[in-house]
Image (cartoon, rainbow, N blue to C red; front, top):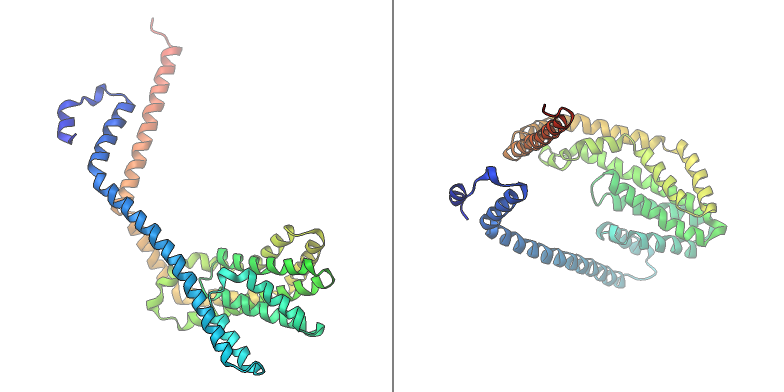
Amino acid sequence: MSLQEIKNNIEFDKLNLNEIKEVASSIINENTKSLKDELEELLLQKEHIERNLEKKSHELQEAKYKIFDELEALIDKDDTHSLSKLHQAKLQLIDLFDLLSETVESAIITALEKSKDSEANEIIEEVIKELTYETIKEGTLNTIRVRKILSTILHSSINIAEASPNISEEILEATLKGMRAGLLQSIDRFKKRLVYMPLEAKHILIEDYDTIMEDLNQSDTLFLQVVQTQANESDLSTRKILIELNNKMHYDLEELIHVSKETAQVMRERFSSLAKKAVKKADTALHSEAAKEAKRMGIQAWGVAKTALGSAIKSAKSVIEPKE
C-alpha cells in the first residue's frame, strides 16, 4: 500500500496503537524489502569472509612455523648463538597473542628443565620479559589488551608454580619481574615512537587519545591489579605468595611510573592539539543528520511520555473529582 493510498483510505484518528503499528510496519516492509535482502546477502558474505579470514590466519601461522622449522634445520645444532638469534626473530615475527598461554608454560618448563637452579630464575625472568614485550608491542597500548596479556602470562606461570611447590615463589617472583620489565620496555618503545611519529599517523592515536593518556597515568595500578586479581583466583598458598610479592612490587615500580609519565607528557605535547581538533569533529558529528534524527526521536519519545502522563493525570482527576 502506497502512502497516497493510506492517505485516501485510512483515518489515523480512528486507529489504536497496534493498528497504527501494523500500518507502519506494512509500509516499512514493502518499501525496504530490497534493502533487507541486500543486507541479508551482505551478512552472509561477511560470515563467509570471517570464516575464511580465520582459516587463512591459521594457515599463515602454520606457514610461519614451517618456515622457521626449515630455517632451524639449516643451522648446526651446536651453533647456539645463531639458533638463539633465529628464535628471537621467531618471537618477533610470529603472532604470539593467540598462543601466549602455551608459549609461557613451555618457556618456563624448558627453563626449569634445562637450566641450573641458580640460572633458572634469571632465564624465566628474561623469557617472560621478552614474551611480554613482544606480545604487547604487536597491538595497541590500551588497558583491556595489556591487562589480558599480563593476566594470561601470570595465570600460565601460576599453573607451573602450583605444580612445583618447592620453587613456586621463585617462579612467580621471576615472572612478575619479567612482566614488569616487559611492560616497561613496551611503554618506553611507545614513547620513542611518539617522538618520531609523523603527524600523518595521528589518526592511529587520536581515537584512543584519552584512554591511552589515562592508561599511562595508572600503569602501576594496572600491574598491581592484575597480580591481585590472579592472587584472588588462586589457591591459598599461591595467593599468599602473590600478595607478599605484590606488596614488595609497590616499591619496585618507580621506573615504570616514571617512564609512563614521560610517555604521557610526550604524547600530550605532540598530539593534544590534534585531540582538540578531534573534539571539534565530534561536535560537528552532533549536528549530523543521524544526530538530528536521534534528537528528534528523543523529543518524540518525550512527547509520548508527556502525553501518557497527561492522560493518566486526567484520568486520575476524573476519579478524584467526579462530575456533579
